[in-house]
Amino acid sequence: MSTFERRRTRQIHIGNIPIGGGAPISVQSMCNTKTTDTEATVRQIRELAAAGCDIVRLAVPDMEAAKNLGNIIR
Image 1 (tube, one colour):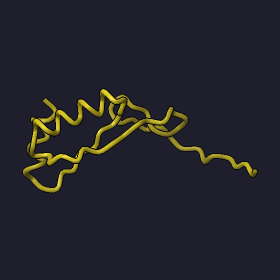
Image 2 (cartoon, rainbow, N blue to C red; image 1 turned 180 degrees about the vertical axis):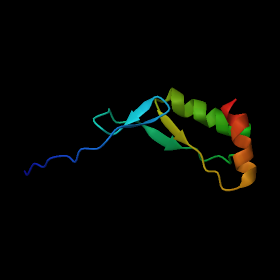
Image 3 (cartoon, one colour; image 1 turned 90 degrees about the vertical axis):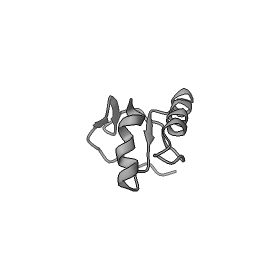
């Protein structure tokens, strides 16, 4: 079995979640709901968070979806 040295990376933060630079592995996922459907998207974000997800990504394919992000954040 060969060993190798891991490449050093610098740490960044997404919100208060550290990524890289020796930080623990973060669990992330992506919603499969339409970002324009506020209720379904928020429900799925809450389910992912309850399952231990640290970062949830959303698709924002158009301006309608972009404009709805404020509703989801609230």
